[in-house]
Length: 386
Image (cartoon, rainbow, N blue to C red; front, side, top):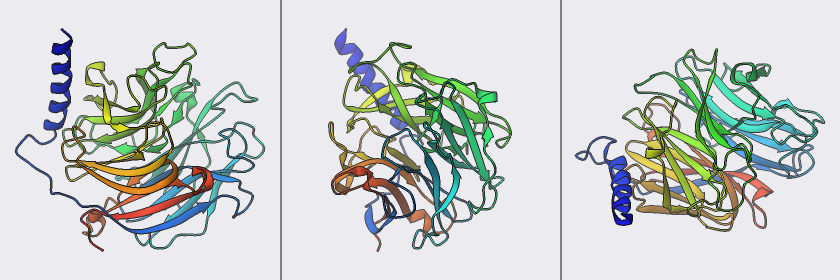
């Protein structure tokens, strides 16, 4: 019986890869090459900021890159007063705007917790989601907020409380990016995911079918034991990053918080626009070893890209991997940074420009002694062109 289960599990992963285009179509091979790297945020150097953390990034249809991070004022800890800091590039990442602050949570002891960013490619509106009181430090009710921009990130709306729509159970968006579905079912839907507290942990996703006017939350996958204190070895998915495949399904690559089954990533898939993620479509990718960290994932022209600190124990050895079969196998790897690193995110510019179709951007936490020292941007040529 054990052998039968193993055969079924392997077959499920194999079929997961085949159903992208069908077996006859093969993506063009890639040979990623780092062509440029810049430090965008350095702790302790600009303003009253001790540490910059939690990098998120989006590319707009007009060809602009927008990065947003937490500017932690007095320590590197997850709670405490923060700014939401932003830098923009209008020339494919070559030069960057001066740092701007979208909002400041003042002396709030459990302030802004980033976050996800997404762009509606129909209206060109950009949304950033974040949470207050994510850790319940000197506060009792968690609140999810959203700010938006209609001018490519130059100015931002006042925060909008969306907990009135999705409820007050703690929802920590991302970190990473959200997406707009390009294919049926629910073509045009805005979609982003996050997680709740460690004890009540579940991956949940927000959807909007009216360009961000209203939001609905769907619980995707809950932790086990749900509602109880966790320990090493428990099933506790967190910090999810979704992407859409050409068949319209949504794949979520998630952090394996307490290392259930392996020191690796949790993969889940939805066929109904992100409303459900059946357990029969959940598996563990043992090739993607991981120390429990937020990772980046991106899909382009039949190739899936993945970035994380490729270690079972330490937050170091940041790698970019790629797959031609939707993550069934990962034949390619590009070392990015061997020393301390942590959270990372991937993005491309969603334009028809030939150059934009050939470059991938990786934003990650980087340091010599600590990954919290800086946030760096790497520009990668997908086909090895300088």
